[in-house]
Image (cartoon, rainbow over all chains, first blue to last red; front, side, top):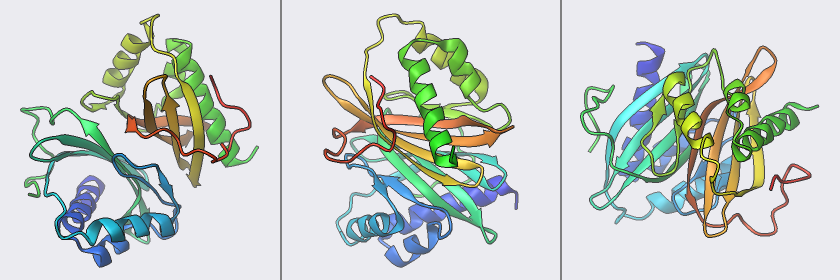
Length: 134
Length: 134
């Protein structure tokens, strides 16, 4: 598997955990050696593993979280780090996310996530992944 | 100068170029070896140096660009890459930005920028840089 495919796979795993309220998996997907940070839409930024994990524990403990579709994920890989951009498409609105990954012990793990308001994803642009998560 | 201070200095340089409509300097601040990307608020994502630079050329050619203040810049450095989070405070609204830097030939250069809507920066949090850019 190419680095790019592996990073997009890790990005998919992040959204599978997100959409299935799977906090235990979400926790394993975040970096342990690199310092982490997160910006949820409408929140102040969070810095440090404790604050970031606390936020995900809260978000994923809500069984009525609004479902969304992951669209148009695309990765730029540079050595042992990568930037993934993707769209989080809700029924009424769209967000665009930056997910920064680092390679730790052979695994691509999330170092930073920002998601914020966006136009809908560009139409006609083929996703790099064969299937999108819904 | 510590890596963290150097990254925050590079982040300051990015905003000085931004706020002074200095496209030539802005161009030098972006990575040349790493693949770059950018998400301006309300835009679709841009991938690749040509598209990203074209966007900055357009933005910085507008002499009536709305001024803002850079606030609460904070950096997480991990080897030869770093994530900076900072707030872009306009008179009527605030944005929060992720700026991803990579070290190339001893220089910290921008690999990715995302800026999107945010609450105002958290009050009472001291910026890591002694002075903010206004």
